[in-house]
Length: 141
Image (cartoon, rainbow, N blue to C red; front, side, top):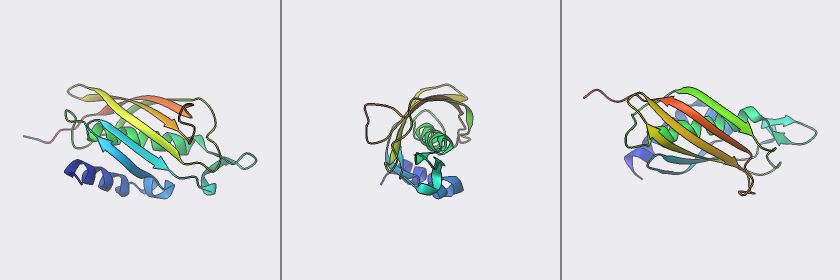
């Protein structure tokens, strides 16, 4: 396991909401993170349909996006969300794991820009899409 992956896993596990939502780091690369959140009936937003609450989906996308920033070679060791716009495309299918793939596609001196897509087992139809801006905090040299 690389240092970046170790740090990313520690970051995710240090966040109480990540643990509470059952988030798992699936894969990580230079500026890319994939995270999963297994279906949990306690996260249902509509008991009649069994659909996971949009807030849980947004938390997954936000955490994956922050992780993508932290593993980008030009970004820093820490980040915080400045702005995150999420467009919900359809309800996630009840009983299925939701995955978020986030990519940090541009980094300036102080801001990183990210795109993310959340899917369930039907990867051809997104559950939600997001764009965001995150702080870039570099270690002092």
